[in-house]
Amino acid sequence: MRIKQVIVAFGIGAALFWAAVPVVGQGGGAAGKAEGSRPWPPNRLPDGQPDVQGIWAAAAGGSTSLTNPIDGQSDFDRRVTGADPRVPSRVIDPPDGLIPYQPWAAALQKQQAQDYDRPTKPEHFDTQHRCLLSGVPRLYYIVPAFKIIQPPGSVVFIWDEYHAYRVIPLDGRPHVAPNVKLWMGDARGHWEGNTLVIDTTNVRGARLTYIGDFHSENAHIVERITFVDADTLNYEATVDDPTVFTRPWTMRVVSKRRPNEEVWEAACYEGNVNPDRWLLKADTKQQ
Image (tube, rainbow, N blue to C red; front, top):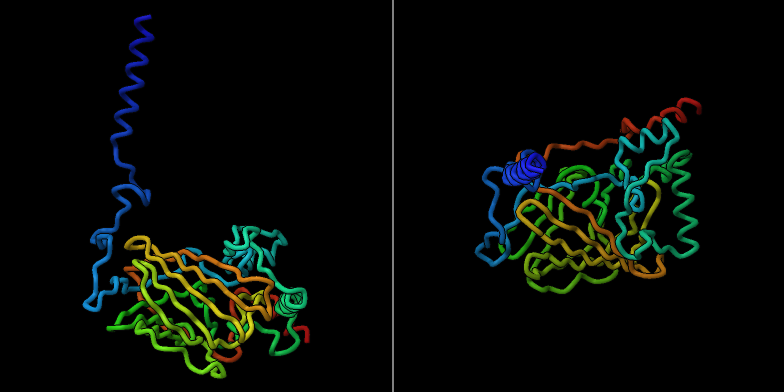
């Protein structure tokens, strides 16, 4: 009995000891905090905005798909091996994680996905591979990082990819005339605490993924960018387009601050072939 008591006492002591030791190498542990990270709540700029300036990038980037958002390497492996990896959908509403297409739009998306794998015309290539602006919301989940700067009274997003940028005025000005269509849309923003709410209209019809997901020029997009801590933001976009979808739907992407990175030039040119486009290269050789 005495031996059992000693063993139990030793086990309890060991458990207390290990509970007191900091967890090293995990994001939530003491060692996981980046040196010099900014305190939260954020500092305020002279115009009252939360200071969220810096370089950010999607934690799991890539625009192969919204409902199965695998990265470029996984997409390449899928084509080579035939295995179909599955990851959680970016679509958070509807709860089934699917985009609520109207029947005609679902058929067009399916056809565009097939054309992407076996293109025969220039329009079969995804707009991102044709060096065209990816637009909103797509630019927030492709791989390259983006930079936020905050001049007084506005928030500016800058991507070196396609040399794209968005200037979000915060002064409540009205949208431009509805007949004006813009690649990046016409955005108006305001802050709700640490959430930047952006109302985007006047968009051009755009592709959302490699596999042909799309919205029309009638889309109305409400974006909510919530800065949950000094190094994390949640990007949510609700797309309302009765021309294409049976109901509004919402997607979410988590982005992380990249304090040690720079936004490098991402040149795109006609005839550019991505490393994962081996099928396109094979098709070209056969023609």
